[in-house]
Image 1 (cartoon, rainbow, N blue to C red):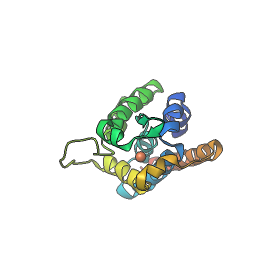
Image 2: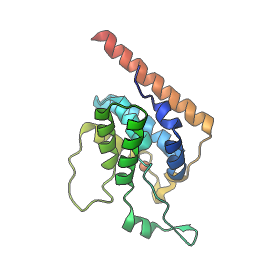
Image 3: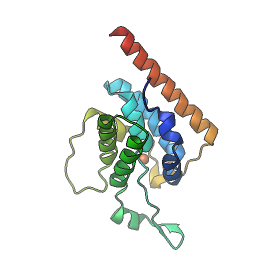
Image 4: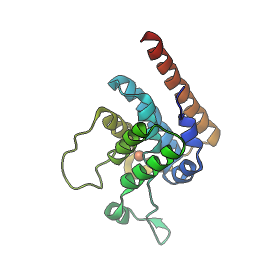
Length: 176
Ligand SMILES: [Fe+2]
C-alpha cells in the first residue's frame, strides 16, 4: 500500500479549496489521462496521477469588474510555480515521501511553458506525461476549467484510479 493515496490528496481541504477554482472535473480527467499515458510511457502512475490531479491548484482568479480577464491572466499568471509550491507543501504535510513530493512538484512546475521565456524545455518522461494529459483535456478559451462534476462521481473516479494503481503495484511486486 502507498503511504499517500490519491483519495487522501483529493479530499484534503487545501486541494478541495483550490481545485474548486480551477475545476474538479478537469483535474479528475487529467489524472485519468495521466494514468493511461504513464502506463504507456513506463512512468510511475502514482506520481503521474498525483501531479495531474494537482497541476492547476496554483490558479489565481484574474477578475476585472466581475469578469475573467484573459489579458491580465496571460500577463501575470504564475499558476505553475504557485501550484508546484502548494502541492509540495500539501504532500509533505500528509506524509508523502520527500523524493516523490519533489518529482510531483517539478512535473507541476513544468506542465505548461506559457509563463516562461521562449525556449525549449527538455522534459523528463514523467513531466511529459503530465503535460500531455493536461493538453488532452484542454478546450478552446479555457472551457475545460468550467466543466462540472458532482462530488460523488469525482470521488468514485479517484478511488478507481487508486485501486488501479495499487493493483499495478501488487502485480509488479509479485513478479519481482
Ligand atoms: Fe490544466
